[in-house]
Length: 500
Ligand code: NAD
Image 1 (cartoon, protein in one colour):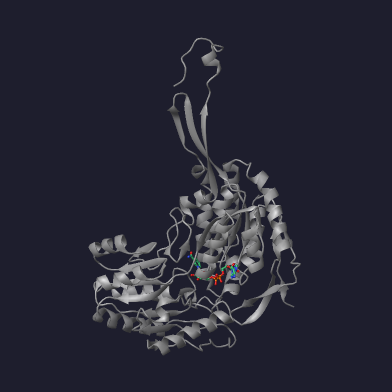
Image 2 (image 1 turned 180 degrees about the vertical axis):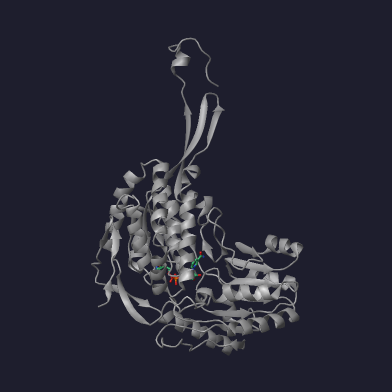
């Protein structure tokens, strides 16, 4: 019997009533391990109503009392990191070590959000005019929603929920239908930590539930992470309906390798950043740009050698470097890109298509794949592949290398490897990309800075986590006050001097 998952609404598991389900696979075996209900409009509207009611109490708590719930959540989740990571790994296909990182990077934003009272303080100008004070306060928006991708089923829901909850909002999470079990467990843990029922809800679903969240006027803001076409659709619809939205999309992250870089360090970094989690990371490096022919030839030789030593296997096997892709369509899509690359004339140095580890003939595995001499006109350069495929695009000069990520339609992350601070400084200043690493392959900023790409990697203005997230999840009220007829002025309080 395949397990039937639920929604989590109003502090309890709720069975789906739409009659629609989506299969949740074990990508290691290719077997269906559960089915997740897809909420229809009525079910989604019911969750919104519950959240709206619950927010009234939650929003009235002091910021510090709300923060204590987040601190208790951290304690509870700490006790079950390993079991949660295994669940995550068995639905997503990333290794347990990667799954632990997924949860950990989410918890860091909860830790940051627990300091929320500091960020909720307003501003105050005493004596802005004669007898006039001006001050501002940050108030919650009400009900807000997060629509999140399959590739970080713990981290991204927590990136959204932490600041949203700390700010006093009620939250509706619409997680990916491909790996919904961890989000459901997060909901149970929030409740156990003391969050009032109905403040954090999980509505599983697809387009119908998302459309409902976009259209219902009770939902005030949407935070989205996923592919660029859907990010743009959600941003456009949210704006048309007068809602706030921050929508993060796809990526094509480059690494520039200067001739003076330590190529062993670079090759190790590229193997981790290109193939880790089967390349299903929005900050994966998918394009290596060596500068100069000698650099390129030497780098390609080192990469090919290291690829030969990579172990692709079951995600729960601690010796695997990476596991399967998330599902069959994802595997088919990536393999199709390899076919396209060959057709376009790129040089396929390592072909991972058709690879299956012993004992798992039906898993969604793909071996590491390496292309050389990929040009900017090719589709495999222009489009996001989102799999274990690393491409090498050679550049003759630094200026040519700098132009590649700068002119690419995506602008999420980029990295440069060099021993020269002058080059690094020039690069960080000029490159047209949101997040930059210097001798760091995956420059994901820590929780108290903000995360966000540029160009078609984002729609909206404020970034995720860091101070921006509190701005996104609150609205500013500004009060201008004057007390012209108080006791001092009327003399009722005895002789005194009027305040300025
Ligand atoms: P996706 O766009 O397919 O799905 C994301 C979410 O949108 C899911 O919850 C899904 O159910 C929902 N969705 C899908 N189609 C929809 C539709 N037509 N209408 C409404 N909702 C819809 O993305 P994915 O495959 O889950 O995730 C991978 C993508 O996410 C990659 O492109 C990756 O680069 C991107 N990503 C970006 C970031 C970032 O911060 N920029 C982070 C992680 C992942």
